[in-house]
Length: 263
Image (cartoon, helix red, strand yellow):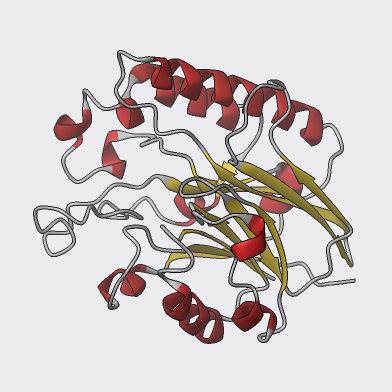
């Protein structure tokens, strides 16, 4: 079973690229972030025509997450618990039936947090604390769980071409990285880093200053696996070629293959 994450940076603007990639890579489940669309206006028809079920948690103009799945959804939950006043659309969970039992997949879009000396950074760290609490509870179910998304965290210096350029950015602050490490330490496996420690492995290249051409990238899109999911991990890869397409997202898909099958 192929499970992918992709910050699409506007699904309506990238729908042709998305459909092309779905046909090319043939993933079973795709977690999208930054769809920038309300639920009613999500361009579901060309995606459903390829055999996908679509569930969204949208928001007008920015944020928004979605899960596309060839498997039928058994359950769908929207919003990260822990703050009833949080109206930002950054979290959706789907539950699916596999031959190994329930599979839980989350599409998450963690707050950017910039500028650091602002409430936005406080919100980022608070969101990460809520995610940690939620994950700790879900792990007690001892089921395959995939936390897929744009974490807006550069975990280690190896995950940036020029880490010194990010020392004042919320993505590389000690507090952000520590929060990501606490999440990992619950028992999660970083799918991509479990198969490669190669430098130059990035998932985001800015549109500015020739970042793509210079491979001046960062790795902020992650597939984090529960022990039950990590045991099934067969491969993981960055779909880097999509960044060279016309009208690309500034992120590329990350894809993992798990030895699971639909029930």
